[in-house]
Length: 319
Image (cartoon, rainbow, N blue to C red; front, side):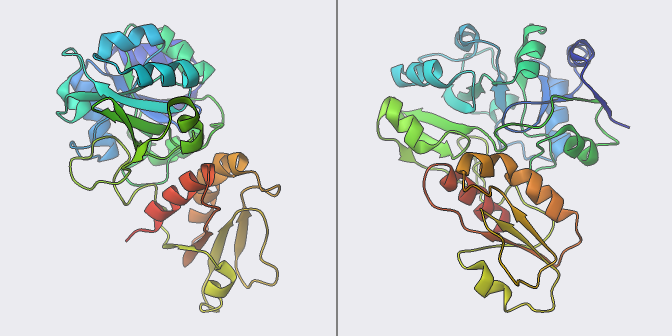
């Protein structure tokens, strides 16, 4: 049975022993292990059933630690780090030799960020090694945004979940890489493209790749409920075609009146995209437990964080 605890020293002890702990961050909970332990990194891939060609994100405690793991860091990467770290921005940079190939899927680059979460940072301060920490869920499933989600996923396999409450951002970090020093967006996430472009100017977008992805989170089917899920611009029209089905709705700000459905989840009654983002995965978890015939999600406004929400919903609905 997985222990759910707020004991940072206990979590640190388990990690020093080369075992895994699920940790809170501001985005989602991560399945964490020592990047220099082959045993721990292999255990992450095995527990998640994650393909070894998919690289892991490394979590560090300070910008000073960045140069231990990365080299030839572009000026624009430094600007982004100064602006958004600690925070939900991951950068893919040329790796130092010390970073194990198992962490980077054999690539010469490494994905790095500093989490903006007091518990995660306190844990990292207690350790003398960085943590690899992909989302703490079986590969392809809905990401966990509280300790209970993780415990339900890995109850027989994982020693401990370090409980840091609900994740405030609610979806994964934005991932930026650099090719010939020019920035490329590999994954939409908690920081909008617009916010990044305010700091470094225009960026290319290259956020889906099936084989040998350049960064984590690029596979086209991901973040998916077990329940069949549809993404529709006109939800009311779509559900009229299924009068006898047990349906759950995932909506932005308004209920659909007189809809013959089992349940409706509203992500932000005030129409706030940041609030909607923070509630997205928790709502998907609730709907997925209702034994529905289908989940029907509303397509969001396609700007700022709405793009990130649509990205997650598109991946959740891909067959």
